[in-house]
Amino acid sequence: DTGDEERALVFSREAVRLDAGFPPGQFYLGMALWKSGDASNALVHLQTAVQLAQGNSVYQYNLGKFLLEHGKPDESVAYFNAALADNPDFAEAHNALGKAFLKLGKTKEAVDYLSQAVALKPTDPHFRYDLGTILLDTGNLDEAVAQLSMAVKLKPDFAPPQQNLAIAFAQKGNLSEAIVHFAKAAELQPDDVSIRFNFGLALLNNHQPAAAAAQFLAELRLAPGQTAAHFRLAQALQQQNQLAAAISHYRQALRLTPNFPEAEKALDEIFVAHPELR
Image (tube, rainbow, N blue to C red; front, side, top):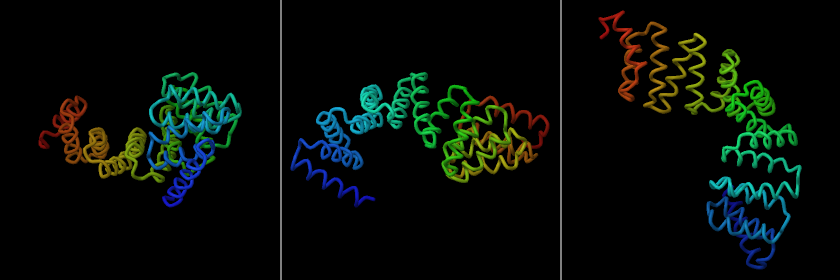
């Protein structure tokens, strides 16, 4: 609530004015400024709180989160480590440190810390999602499915793990399961173009061209000018023998991306078989 945020900012400013050496005042002012979008001043007060209250894991963690969110994962690592030194069972700090290592390209370390967060808080769907996503990205499909399945079990209305679980099943060749989870993701986030495209692709690969076409059309309504969507829609229409419409979308794909050999080849094949459609 905007009013609550404004009041928090006023009260924390007053607390710091009355006693600049009061760590909670500095901390809550930093957090309020962060929420208000005043990043530079937020950083000053969060750093002051950490300096005043040595060994406060919550302050260390939030300063690390601020730095990570503002593109400084290398600096954030030290604060997450400090938070864990004071509180080794701080699951959120393990998770955040895993994300920082992921940003730094240190995948093994990222998996280790994300796994520790899940071990400490196994019922947190966001931790399961974060771990499942990196496992998916690194090709550990069975482990990814296990984590993402638990994430959607814990929070069925959480769209991102629904989508990533669908992608994992698709990569495993289990299109029927993939389609179930893409459908749920699309229901939860109907305006997400990536969900629409991936859902359509799974349907197309599962020999359901009419259903696939509906997803690609929905994507193009949301974001016109998507080359891949025009191309896949053309394929879905061609499979239904709607050749004139397929030709139109192949041509649209080529207008958007002139160097597109697959679209050129598909058009040539149609025209060889049906020269009257040129």
